[in-house]
Length: 123
Length: 284
Image 1 (cartoon, rainbow over the protein chains, first blue to last red):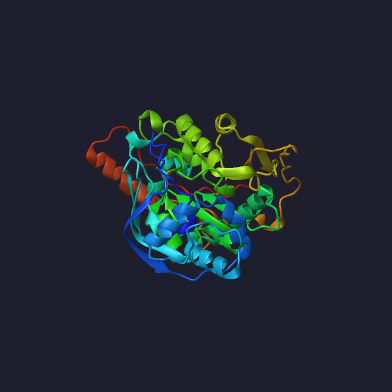
Image 2 (cartoon, rainbow over the protein chains, first blue to last red):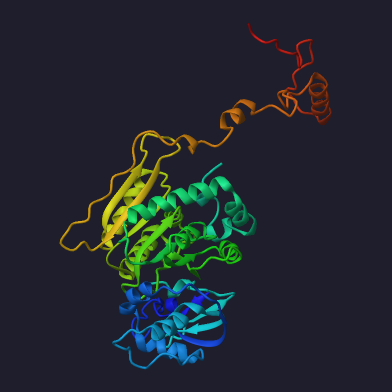
């Protein structure tokens, strides 16, 4: 159940991989849509934490183009609904997440990303 | 029986059967739930805003379920795939990660409003290989530093854990301090054998108002903290269904065994006499 809310927080943690290690790139993904409870207060509180560009890119990659390229100043209801859908309702079930810097691949299977590192990659 | 963390690494100890057992045991569920509520209390999150939490060592989502109920959005990490599989079956809301917390997190700085962890830290105290990155101090350091940066400032992280000695507490708290955390140990019911629970309550930042370490609960443990029928179980230990003591061997069995040993040529087999396998009367 990788949702974009967690994807937007996730950087590569391989030893020495400190720059350009965010966001992880999706590859060969299968997505599933699952409804979640709409909570505008949570979204408003969460907005400052988001990396907006990464979120929009990831959403477009997964085929959702409802978000504007620039983070809007005004938060209207329709925008929050779209944001809610992108952040909390799109689940990546299968696929691979790749770090664009060190090319480490984090496989996602059954909705659970495998973040384990090999011994030489541990910082 | 020895502690589970001494028997095998977590991802092996919590295999398919153990993961199911752990999750279905109602006593276990109750304890986990109590500790989760207490950990949330210690987290002391602001009431008015919904928080985004990290559940470290979420397992099958016993504590995650409570986070769901309380209206938190959360993410869980665990190293045991079987536990996560059970979590998937249980249909919980949070995102799950298969991750070794001793390898550190990759979350962006300031991602989480708080972290809880129930019965996990003691698993970090065993080295699985001789590689330097596998030593407990190294793993603890890596864990606490990456966690510290993943938490918002100010925020808290609360860990319930089962240390087996004061040295272990010392090791863990010093690693946490080195990583920049404030805070310390909170002990609930310090004088009770069973209800005693140890929480590590860590603070990120503090701002102007210094954060105070909360006080542990004291006084008598609650009544229902004992397992049902515990006394009866003790009394009846060593009795079979019919109320007789089990496994007392009778004279024939002893004679047969001695005969067998003699036939095999074992030395010093005691001789048979009228006292062999004799019943002992109750003492009055």
